[in-house]
Amino acid sequence: MSPADTGASTIVAATIPVPDSDSRLTPGGPGYRRMSFALFLAGVATFALLYSTQALLPLISSGFAVSASAASWTVAAATGGLALFVLPMSALSERFGRRTVMTASLVVAVSIGVLVPFAPSLGALVALRFLQGAALAGLPASATAYLAEEVRPKALVTAIGLFVAGNSVGGMSGRVITGWVAQEWGWRVAVGVIGLIAVGCAIAFRLLLPAPRHFTPGSLRPRVLARTVRDHLANPLLCRLYAIGALFMTVFGGVYTVIGYRLTEAPFSLPQGIIGSIFLVYLVGTVSASTAGRLVGRLGRRGALYLAGGTTAAGLVVSLADSLPLVLLGLVLITAGFFAGHAVASSAVSKTATTGRAQASALYQSAYYIGSSTGSTVGAMAFHAGGWAGTVGVGILAVAGVVTITVLGSRAARVERRGLAPIGPSGA
Image (cartoon, rainbow, N blue to C red; front, side):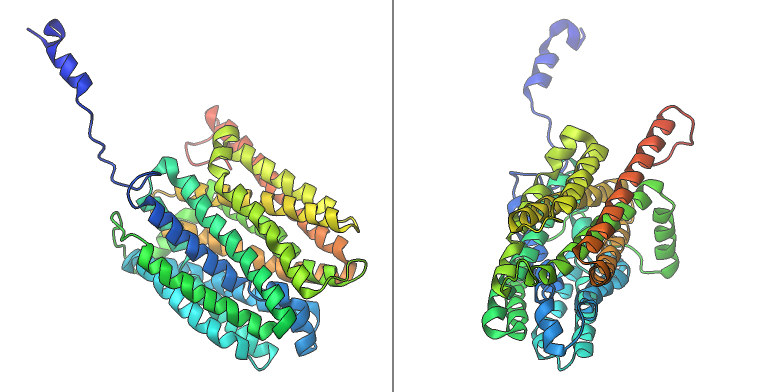
C-alpha cells in the first residue's frame, strides 16, 4: 500500500523538520553579531583615516600657506591611492583570504597614521596620505566579498548596510573629533588622535571577526585576473552600478571637502570646533545605510536609487540658502541620499557577481573612490571659481547622471523581459 493510502509517511514527513544545509551567517544566528560589529569597526577605522584631513582643510591651508584646491589633495591623494590599489589588493584576498588581507591593510594604514602628524610639508603630507589610502585598499572590496561568501543572500543588503553604516560613523567621528581637537591643539594633534582611535578599532576587528568558512582560494595568475576583470566590465549591469557609485561619491566628496571653507566665511564665520560638529549629520547616513535593505524590499533596487538621487538633489538645492539651519538641512538630505544610494549599489554588485566577487567589488570601490577624488578636486575648483553655487552645480550634474543611468537600466530591463534583447544581465 502506498504512503498516500496509509497516510503514515505523510504524517512523519510533516512532523520531521527539514535540516537547513546553509551554514552561512544569518541575523540572530551564531557569529552574526560578532561579524557585524567587527566589520562595523573596520568601516569606522577606514573612513576615519581616509578622511581625517577633510574637516581640517582650512587649517592645513593656513598652516602651509596654500589654496583650498592645493589642500584638497590631502583628501584626493588618499582616495586616489585606494582607487588605484583596490583591484590588486582584491586579487591578493582571492589567494590569501579576506580576513588576512583586511587585517594587513588596517595594520599598515594605522602605522602610517602615526607618521602623518609629523609631515614637514604639504608634499610630504600628500605622499603619506596616498600611501595610507593604498594600504586601506585591501579592506573595502575584501569586506564586501567576505560578506557575500559568509552571509545568506537574503541578509546581504542589511549586512553590507551595517558595514557602510560603520563608514558613516567613522567619517562623522573623525571629523567631529578632529574639529574640536584642532581648535585647541592644531591639526597635527588632531590627525594623531584619529590614528590612535584607528589602532583600537583594528585590534578589536581582528579579535572579533569570525574565521571564514566558505572561502575558496583563487589564482594570482595575471591572465585569470585579467579575464575576470574583463568579464565584469562586459556586464552592463555592473558597469552601470560602478558609474552610479562614482557619481554619488562625486557629490559627497565635493560637498564635504568644501563645506568647511564655506562655513568659515561670512555670513557664518564659525570656529573650527563647531564646523567639525556639523559632521554629526553623518548619523543620518548611518540610519539610511542600515535600512537600505528594507528600502529595496519596498521600492525595488531602481526605486531606491531614484529616491536616493532625488533626496541628494533636494539637499543640494536647499544648501544654497545663506541660513545655517537650511544649510544643515541640506547636508542631512545629501548625506541620507548618498549613503542609501551607496549601500544599494554596492550590495547589488555583490549579488550580481557570481564569480570573482572580490574583483567585482574592487572595481566598484575603484570607481567609487575615483568619484571621491574627482569630487574633492573639482568641487574645490568650482568653489574657488563660483563659490558654493559652483560646488552645488557639480553635484547636480552628478545626480542627473545617476538618474539617467538608472532610467537606461530600467529600459534595458523592460526590453529584455519582452524578449527583444539577448538574455543577459540588465537593470540598474
